[in-house]
Structures are given as C-alpha cells and as structure tokens.
Image (cartoon, rainbow, N blue to C red):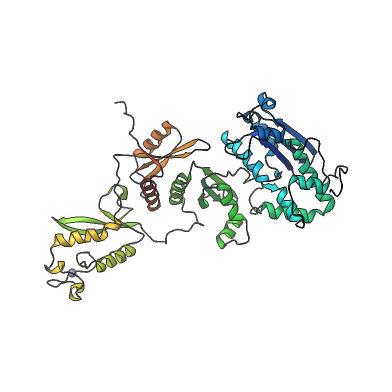
Length: 488
Ligand SMILES: [Zn+2]
C-alpha cells in the first residue's frame, strides 16, 4: 500500500543546478544491438521545468514482447524521425546537465552508443535514482520504479512511456526534497556521482568535452605558450584525467598537478596503440616536468658487434645520438647509460666464460692473459688457447637475447588500427622503428612520409618496443607503403 496514494504533486525541489530526468524506450536490453524507440526528457533549469519527448524510428522491428511492455508498436514509429535527425536536439538538451535516470546505466549507455554511431561525443555526470533511493532509504528493499511509485505516491497517466516515466523520476526527486533537507540529498548525490573537485585554476567547463575514448592528454601550466607539465595516455581519456583530480588517495604528483594545471588538451586516437605511440613521441619531444623520466645524464646506447679481422668480432659501444639504431645492423641492447651497458656486458661475459680483454672491459697487458684467465674464468682467447672466431661465435650466442631486431621491411609500413564502433581507422606510419605520424586518410600518408624524407626520426626505445610488440602479436594489420612514383 502506498503511504500517500495519488497525492497531489510534490512541491518542487529548490533549484541548485540544471538537471535532466531521462527515460528511454528501446527495442530490447542490449545497447549495441538494440535501438531507442522513444525519448522522454524533463529538464529542470533556473527558469523552471520543461518537458520534451519524441518517438524514434529504430530502423529495426520491435519484438512483440517489447511492444506489449512499452505500448510502442512498429506502426507508431514508422513515421517517427530516426535518432540521427534528433541527435543535435537531444544533445543540446542533455549537455552540461546532471543526467538523472532510473537504472541510469541503461539509458546513459543507450544514448552514448546512439551518439557514438553518429560520431557525436556525449558524456554526462550520471545520477541513478535506484542508487539514490537505496542510499537515502536503505530500510526499504525494493527500489524499482514501481516500488517508488507506490511508496511515494507518485502518479502519471501513461506509465512505461518515456516521458511519463521521466516525469515519475522527477516527482520522486521533488518528493525526496519534501521529506529530507537538501544537505543529505546532495551529499548522497555527490557520493554517488563521484564528481571530482576540479583543480583551482581550471575553468569549470574545461573538462566538459573530454571523451571516453582512447587518446593522449597534455596538462599545461600558467604560461600561455609554455611546455606541457605532464603528458599521459589512456584508453578512456575522461576517466583517466578525472582520476588525477579526484579521490582521497592522491599521490604527491597528483597534488602538484592539481595545483599547477591551468589548461588541459587532448588528442583522440582510434585505439591504444595509437595512444601509446603518440605519447612516446610527445614525451620525447617535450620531456614534461611532472612525468617520470629516465635518470638524468642517461644516454641511450647499445653494443655493436664489429668485425675487426676475418671472424674476429668485438663489441663497440654506440650511442643513439650518434648512430641511427633503426638503420644499423648487429646492435645489442638497449642500455640507458654507458655504465649500464658495461655492467651488462661484464655479467654476460662472466656467465659465458668470455674474455674481458676481447670484450674491451680490460686492457691487454703485453704477453699476459687476462685476469679472468688466471682465475680459470676466461677460456683463453687472449692467449691463443681459444680461437678468436670461436670466441666471437660464443659472444654472439651469449648476446643473442639482446639483439635489436633489424627492420624487416623494404621501407615504411602502416599499422592499421580500427575502432569498429565509430568505424574510425588510424594508420600509424612507421619506418625503421620510428613512428612518423598517424593518418586517417590516404593522402595524409604521403604527407607524413614527405615531411619525414629530409630528416629521419630519432630512435626511441619505447617506440621500438611498442611497434615490435604490436607486429609480433599480430595485433594490428601491417601494410607496406610504397610511395607513389614522383613525376620526373
Ligand atoms: Zn682472457
């Protein structure tokens, strides 16, 4: 039994911020396969309450069971506009408002997918009235809309149609304000929506358009044309950026970020590989102060095996600054400093009984074997007890695991990364382990390659690792790129 059956409409809740109470009817429960058949929106703004609703032609048949439930038939939606024709209107009504719905994940998920199919971005702070009811009235076990209708004496004529149910949720909201003071209600809203407090210098709308898509974000400080303070990547930009500024478990870096950030920029990518490649490229270019970097003074280096005499291979330390690692053969590494390279070679040498003199780790004393040989660790290549070619062969085998892969293609390639949902495709242009850029259209590929022509991109350890892994795992399609023939 209802507490207040068919009571007069509740007094309106005091206005605090713009709200939209949303309800949808659909062809089923699957937001990917099913479609919206009706949208109902009750908007609460400072100016008052307005309502809007429309039937939507879903483009697919409505199952008889659903027709019975929603009272929306195929005939009713046959002449209704498709979602594409309503999208801008709906977006305008929802944007920048707290999105309130019953089982909000359902309605929010459906709308997000419909927008995404059209290439439109939509996101909102979402308040679920099931959760709100449970939070404020935990003594009750049932929080379905039917239960709330009964418990709070809500009424609307066309129960189960979209606008009618949106009105019921709105009535529920007003009813709560008749029953409780605003503070506990809004405290519950803040807890349930987990709205982060934005950093003090960031304009309130700065993050409104952050998409829930993969990409790279850059945080900037006060100077208008300064370098970024921090660069990061995520498969969900919105979630990741907000996570820096929310939560009580802030680390020191997040605190510094929140205090210093004045501006946030982002670049969307079709997938995670693109985000990682772009992040590596931007980190290398900008070296932002709040990112963790390799130790200062570090220089990327490797061992290169050089044939000094027929069959006699010796390791030579080479720096990425001086040699293009993407185009040089017989490299082993990588190391972040000469010291690290030497330590690693020494360890491998000792494990494989190689000669420190031949490895260049110890000076040859005239007429004497190396120290290791006296300790029975070196097999004696330094004093004729092992041939130089045999020592070289053992050295190559010992270093094999560290070998830097030589570029296996004739020239540049494209790594194809697709986002099936929004049907965007990124083509990451890569040459000799260097990431040159990402193209969405064919002609961009050649622009990227032409720009690159004069100056090869620097070898980057992280980029090498990412490309190598993506190709080895077969995670992306590889397309060999042959430049168009230039007119003579
Ligand atoms: Zn020796």
